[in-house]
Image 1 (tube, rainbow over the protein chains, first blue to last red):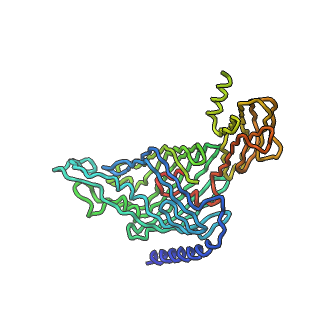
Image 2 (image 1 turned 45 degrees about the vertical axis):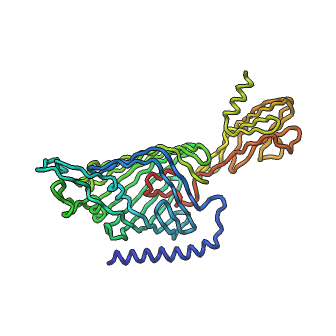
Image 3 (image 1 turned 60 degrees about the horizontal axis):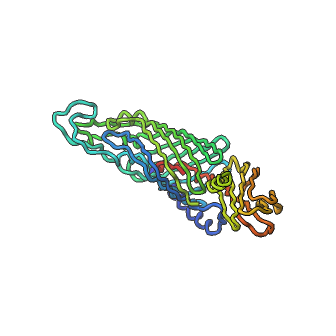
Length: 276
Length: 130
C-alpha cells in the first residue's frame, strides 16, 4: 500500500513538473549552439555474453542513439524523464524506464536434454527452456553530479508494472580524458537488486521447476560493473568507438540453476555517426 | 619530381581547397576539439599553399585584417601558425587584390561535451557509445 502511495506521489510530481515545464518551454530561449536532439548511429560488431544456461550471446551490429532534451522533459533511448532540479552541483530527475535484466531471457533456446542442470542423468530426455521473464516498467529518481574529479550517477528505480515489484539502487562513477581527437573513459559501478527483483529474474518458481531444474529463490544482492570506452573523432560527424564492458552478477543470482556464467562480458568496435 | 610530390601531398592532406588560378591551399589540422576541461584549442596549424603561377600572394585568417604572411615571386609556401582558438575560423590566400580570395580553408572547433549533465547520463542503452 505504502509503495503504491509513493508511486502515485512520484507520478503526480512528474506530471506537475512536466506541465509547468511545458509552459516554461514555450517562452524559454534555446541555446542556438546545441540542438535539443541527439541522434546518431553506430555500425560495427560487438557481442554481449549471456549468463543463462542454454542461451546465445547477444550480437550488436547496429546501435541507434535517439535522445531529446528539453528544459525539463527528456527522452533518452527509451528512458523518459522530467528534471525538477538542476544547479551547479547536481541534476535531479524523475525517470521512467524499462528494466534491462529481461534482455538475456530473449536469447534462450529450447533443447532436448538428458541431464538436469546439476549434471544428473534423467530417466528420459525431455525438452527444456529457461523460463520466460517479462520487461518491467520502472519509475525512479536519478541524480547526476560532476566536477574536476569525474562524474557520478546515482539512481533508484521501483517497478510500477506489477512485474517484479522490487527495486534497484544504482551508482556509477566515470572519469574521462580527452587529448584532441582521442577520448578514453573508464567507469565502475554497482547496483543493489532487491529480493523481489532478483528473485523474479533469477529465481525458479515451483511452477517452473521440473525434472531438469529445481526451485530456487534468490535474495537481494549487489552486481558490480566496469567499463572502458575509447573513442577517436575522425571528423565532425564520424568517430571510431571501442568499448569493453564487464558485469559480475551477484552471488544470489549466480547460484541460480538457470545461470551458467556469472560474468557478463561485452565488447563493441565500430564507426559512429552523430547528426550535428 | 619534388613539385609532383608536393602536389600529391597537398592532395592527400585534409582541408584542401582548390581555387581559381590553380591555387591549392591545405591546412592541417582542420578539426579542433574542446570540452569543459579544455575549453580552447592551443595548437599549431600547418598551412601549405601552391600556385600554378609565381607571384605575390598573401595568407589571411579571421584573426586579423592584416595578412598572416605574404610571399613575393613565389609559387609555393608553408607556414606553422600557432593559435589559441575557441570558435571556427578560416585561412585564405589572396593575390595582389586582397579582396579576392583565391582559395580558402575553414577550421572547425567542435565542442564535445555539454553543460547539460543529462546528455552524459549512462543509460541502459546497450552500448551508450556516443
